[in-house]
Amino acid sequence: MSNRIATLNLDNDTVVELPVYEGTLGQDVIDIGNLGSHGVFTFDPGFTSTAACRSDITFIDGDKGILLHRGYPIQVLAEKSDHLETCYLLLEGELPNRDQKTAFENTITQHTMVNRSMEQFITGFHHDAHPMAMLCSLVGAMSSFYHDSLDITNQDHRTISAHRLIAKMPTIAAMCHKHFIGQPYIYPDNSLSYSENFLHMMFATPCEEYKIHPSISNAMDRIFLLHADHEQNASTSTVRLAGSSGANPYACVAAGIAALWGPAHGGANEAVLSMLDKIGDVSNIPEYIKKAKEKDDPFRLMGFGHRVYKNHDPRATVMRESCNEVLGVLGLENDPLFKLAKELERIALEDEYFVEKKLYPNVDFYSGIILKALGIPVEMFTVIFATGRTVGWIAHWNEMLRNPYRIGRPRQLYTGSDTRDFPPIEQRS
Ligand code: SDX
Image 1 (cartoon, protein in one colour):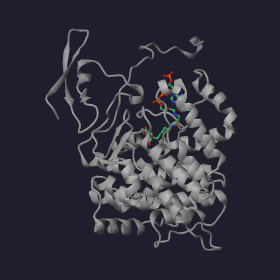
Image 2 (cartoon, rainbow, N blue to C red; image 1 turned 180 degrees about the horizontal axis):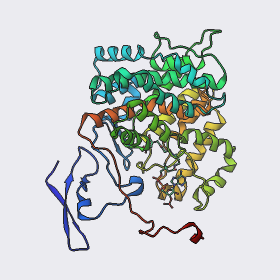
Image 3 (cartoon, rainbow, N blue to C red; image 1 turned 90 degrees about the vertical axis):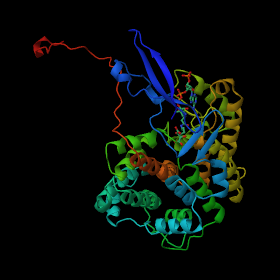
């Protein structure tokens, strides 16, 4: 907090004094909470300059391309940590010691199975239902199994819900995939790590042993880690808003999944692959760069640009390195898609439109290429994003409920009709 004041001179000679708060890092904020009592609201569609909450979880400096989780740079976590350890960090605020890490891993492992009834829900979907449609529904339905722990004012209930969601998302995700390809579900194997288990449930069959390549499971783990949290993005803000009404955690995460699905957000990784397929060849890149710059053309260079990053997204840099490693391990160094993506990045970053608007590759640009190389079908890309981001959603939900909060209820600039008389139907045009 600070005792700094911002002064607002309204046109009716009213001078409004507004408190200014300073954070640990980043922009200061002006508390406009009482502005409504002076007869005015602020107007900020898209929340480009609006802080909706206080948070200790993640910090982004978009100009410098910095991303910290509880103070640890994402590059360091990607190199030295793993997804479950990062989950602990995001939930608890500190890295676990050895005993805490082991206990947390065991807790998550013990919750990886889902109730058999979930299989009935999935059976109801058409075989080619998009996995995100299934994921949305199944996560929302999870609350129907846990009536014993839905008291959001009870920290123990919030903790077990967080653990269940982190543990069961890979299982549910893999079940959606198996339904999509018409194969039997593979149960979790408690002898495997989080990411090994996910790959096992995705690709194993009852007919033969499935061998997991360490480089592949490490790459999968890094992808989950890089997607774990990202401050107040659209889907996390959706989870917070849903949570502010007192909705249960499964309903809140289902709302976050729905928000993530859009191609402007988490759906971009799937859209990047479709875009690269459409571009097809390096020779076509200039035509698509031109389309991306045309105002009246809805085409956007998917995987480029970001509301906050006006520099390289540090996750994209790590993802590109992982891409190189995975393709090398798989003998796909000359993967045409990867070569096309790297050439598209090179050309775009030299184009003055992209330079002037500070449009850099974001987390979604390279993730799809790795996922495709790992054998993940494109329909599952956003499901993978949601699986990694589950911890971020539930960490923010927890943080909000642990502190004083009110239901989120924005106001508006009304531009509709003034009061008018009701015309009888014969007088209507
Ligand atoms: C994620 O918020 C998060 O943290 C999200 C995320 C997370 O981890 O949760 O990081 C994950 O969602 C990453 C973003 C994935 N989406 C895409 O890759 C889709 C393509 N990108 C764009 O749709 C866009 O860049 C957004 C949605 C990401 C950002 O939108 P903004 O901040 O509202 O920016 P904008 O649309 O107002 O663009 C500013 C200008 C516009 O031109 P002008 O009107 O100023 O002339 O830049 C242009 C846009 O036309 N522009 C692009 C572009 N992105 C922005 N032009 C071409 N191609 C693009 N990709």
